[in-house]
Every structure is written in C-alpha cells, then in structure tokens.
Image 1 (spheres, helix red, strand yellow):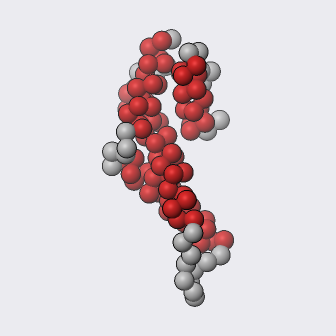
Image 2: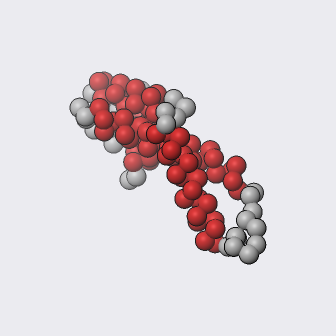
Length: 105
C-alpha cells in the first residue's frame, strides 16, 4: 500500500472513530511531518493537474505522449515545491490527526 493510500485510510479511520490498520506508533516527529508533507504534495499536485490539462505545446517541439508524461511530472514537482515551502496547511492538519490517532492507541 502506498504512503498516500495509508494516510487516507488513517484519516477515514480517525473520522469514523476507529483505529486504522495502517496506523503505527512513531516517536520520530520528523518522519510523521515528512509523511504529512508528502500527503499535502500529492493533494496539491492532484488539484493542479486540471490547470495544465488544456495547455498545448507549440510545434515543432511540443506535443505527444512524452509531453504529457513530462507535464505530469512537472505538476507533481510543483505540488512538492509548494508543500516544502509551507503549503496551504494540509500537512499541519494531517500531522495533528496522525499524532492524535497515535495518542488514542
């Protein structure tokens, strides 16, 4: 299971008041923060994808499947960059929920 899927599963478990099967105790706050930031980066890149969907590259160098792959990777890096620069607060909330879920255990 990917880290993002595990975080989503944990969030749903916390919201419904039950323990998540993927919730593991971690005393390393830096690691918890890193995972929360990865989640925010994934969320941001998914939200940014539609902004770039209709932009077409000009000839003779643009277009094709490789352009689509490159653009997808570029948008993923935009999401990571925004999250590293402080993001929009999602990582803080996710980290709080992760720590709250660990405390409940």
